[in-house]
Image (cartoon, rainbow, N blue to C red; front, side):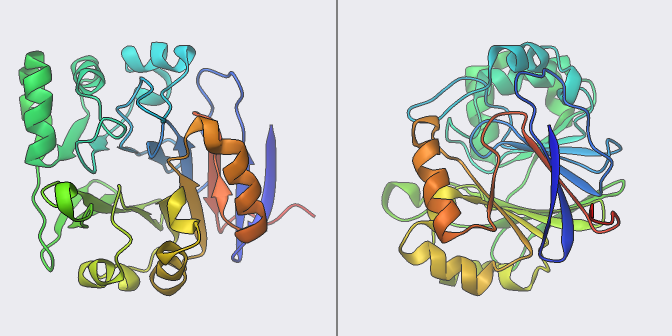
Length: 282
């Protein structure tokens, strides 16, 4: 099923693929394909593909995994997982990266570059010693405030920057935000960044010229998240993600009332495509 809408001056093409194993990427500047939780694939019409927090296949705690038909594709690095140029991982938590699933994809894929923190890579090596065969395709990064790490991979530019996961037991976690420039647009992914305005200011998020922001759904709940978004991440397109399946209906109802312009991709393999070049349907 395909539909379109004009949001923030740009045409948004929505495609929902219920039960389809390998969705066709629509002709658009940037297509976002939902995976599990905060996992996405970013594509520019199929020429380049970037995965973020997408190496998650099994449910964990409240959070979902991938349906069996999609896991079958993932386990063979086929279909939408066949041409992933780079797989970015924001942090080590199991709802964002599952070592066994990461190992599986990296072994089956011949060209995917995995980029993440030393914490993530160490845990992956601990849980999956076979990962050593992909060692040359693993890049460890450690961006600091004021010192982001920038990678140019062909037509794709990726800026990795530090965003705190929070205080207490979360203070030692390395959590990275990513700004992916693909298809002429800039896409923000924040991992599980704490809703701390000072942290976003330190990272310079407000001056990144973002087109699409992928944000955990709790950023839109009453409290500090709403002010953070309106002040520092008030970008043309926003997608709320990381919604537990058991809370999807309630969250959608709330969002439709409070944030009607924020998109939700409800199921794994649902897509939304953004293109300023396509005229709206009359």
